Amino acid sequence: MIKSFQDCLRKGKIKNFSRGKSLAGKELRLAKEDLNSARKSFTDKNYRWCVIQVYYSMFHSARSLLYFKNYRDSG
Image (tube, rainbow, N blue to C red; front, top):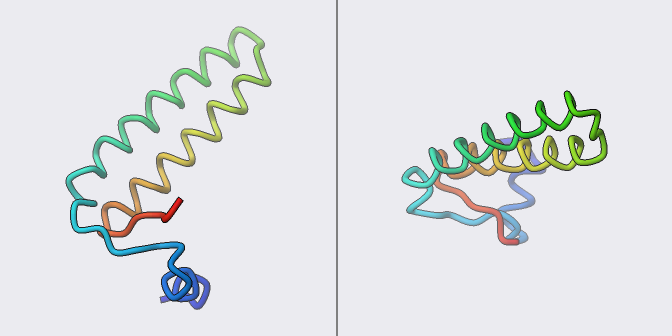
C-alpha cells in the first residue's frame, strides 16, 4: 500500500466497511449520472454548475473504488 493510504487508515480517515462491495455499483451509477448532467450543463454553457457536477462525479467515482475494496471514508 502507498504510505499516504496507510496513514489515512492509521488516522481513521479511511475505515474498513464490510458492505462496501454491495454499494460500489450505486456510487458508480451516481458518478455516471453526475457526469451526464455535467455534459448537459456544459452544452448549455452553464460552466460553473458543470464544474460542480464534474466534482461530484469524481467524488462518487472515488467512493465507488473505496467501496469496491471494502473501505469507506470517515466523513
